[in-house]
Image (tube, rainbow, N blue to C red):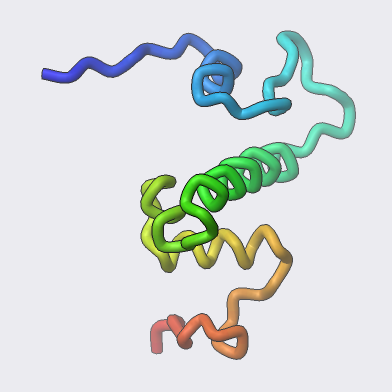
Length: 96
């Protein structure tokens, strides 16, 4: 049976996966802290790393991140600021 490595804190987790510059110091959150911005920067860095490791092949990058291609494409659009609409080639995924 495989054992999972235990991680004590979020900072320990980020250090273990090698995401640079995202760990917050212990203590109170800084004034003006934005969880959305912080998580967005983490997500962007991991997506960039996956794209680099997969030589720009989005399907392979999605697999590295444990996402479907569709989930990956949605996150790319979200991070780029593009609306996720049928006009942008999303295929009209809205349910009728």
